[in-house]
Length: 486
Image (cartoon, rainbow, N blue to C red):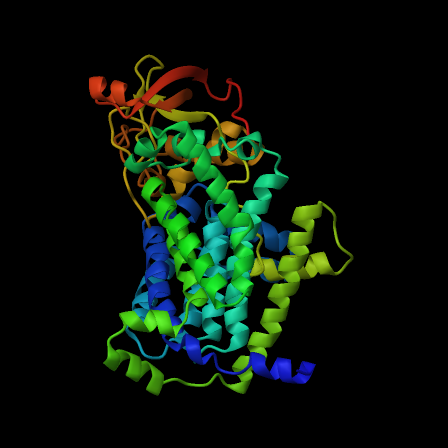
């Protein structure tokens, strides 16, 4: 087959992916809804003018430093208005457009709008929304635009490439980190206890015998390092890759609160299947309707897909090269890669490359007199020893998640914690609304302190005796304690 014929085939409709693509778009609408819905109640406190990291201040500083280039470096609608009303209206609009995508017949415009809105919120959230699931949703949502009028082979390949990067790079990063927890297969001995937001299933998994946990660790490495290559092999191998990947994601959901990333990974596995499998779960009338109403992508959409697909490939390959070798490629490749990444595309993924072996929890307390101290209560992070860890998938509580990183005592983490305490000192309602309980509703405290505790899951015997899910020991006042490593 000549290069011209090969290129031409990329634009041919993927006739065996019509039902799969239709189902993907409908389920993606639910993921988008979950992502936007969680921000409706959080974005003001995180990034509003009276929030922890005010986005309007960030934009003003960037523009004064970079001029018009700041618009390219920080593509967001909030250049026009970054107030509380604009931030929350964007999150609410995302919810409404997600519903339009779920129930509507013409997905192209809703998909474009959802991508723009979530890209804007991702930049606005700064470090609170700078996570791999946010990047994964942006790139998945962007690729979904390419199949809005029907899938072609190029779009399906880009979905395969995205899933491969997510899985393989997450695996290889565990080896590149030289973390002994992965090399000696003990990562899961501590993972269930030390992950950011465990739920009750995490406690039960932590009680499993060590040989099971070590075997499961080996299975994770196999599923992330070997299985991803099956994505590009003939159909039986792709089906095996889908089965293993979906199984791993379901086990993670059963033992961890990782918002929607595992659900979205399962959705990406749909493209390893085909209509012969997916069609078994469709009513015959619906299958016939979808097939009869298929539309071939327009020439403009094909050209757009080719150009952006090439940019995604270049950017991702450059970033993979940097990640695996630690070296910078020749210019201007790094600049191209980072420009593409500014739009949420071409990312590298590295889920849990290192494993924490100790859980430090911070307890923020306030006082009017420096004698009687009262604690601020977070919504979901471990605090009260008797409280059952909640299952909250697909919700993403950004404050509870971020405070898990602070015990590392990195400068960026200490900066936002200081900003958070400043807003508590003002009793800023947008920030205190992020908490489950503000013990100083009438008057903010005069003094603050942050206590650091080491937390462990109780054993089955300890829980039977006390009813507690956790046990803890006081380490001291933060940050005058040993930083958590890694």
